[in-house]
Image 1: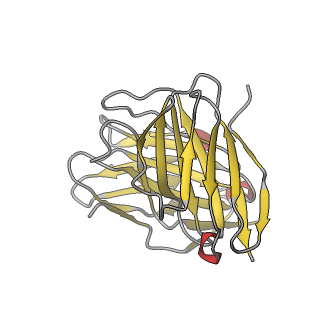
Image 2: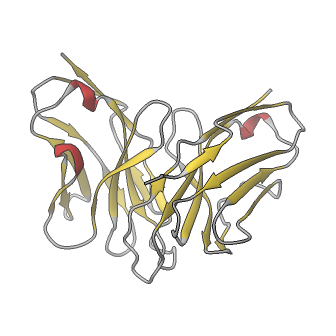
Length: 116
Length: 117
């Protein structure tokens, strides 16, 4: 079965420190991977995606993610965290059998708390 | 420009009532998705439209759930005879087009929080 795992329910980091939010996946074929962020009472906002090409993907708001095929991981990173980065982060993978459209399978989410 | 909008933002229904949730996608977006997000969980796929055609409804949890997009723009998700387990946030998303190998990101609305009492 295809799935995405976010092993940490919550990540705590001090402002200015680097942050990592972990994601591992299990899919058939080559994965299409996405990160979304959700602020309270708002919809999900797209951060970045990996389809093919360079393993290091840069996205919005200074976030980046590293695709690692051997470890089946797609961890989200940022060199210097801001308090405003505090939110709920979701990793997602495209369902391989979706027939050409982005039917996404989401992880359970990781709450990021950045402390001043 | 305007993003994806959903209405109502909050809905309280008594068990057994029917509800209708509306989604206005970004103008011109071909693809439209509905997701259900239970408390503390990630969104789960419900159904997918390409224009007015419902190409995938594999995620609809029961035959009480019905979705339509008759003119290929606005979509409505209807839940008949609501049950407590239907309580969740219902998210709508749209994306520009659907092609083989489509990699476009989805633009999400703010969701409708449904509470069934």
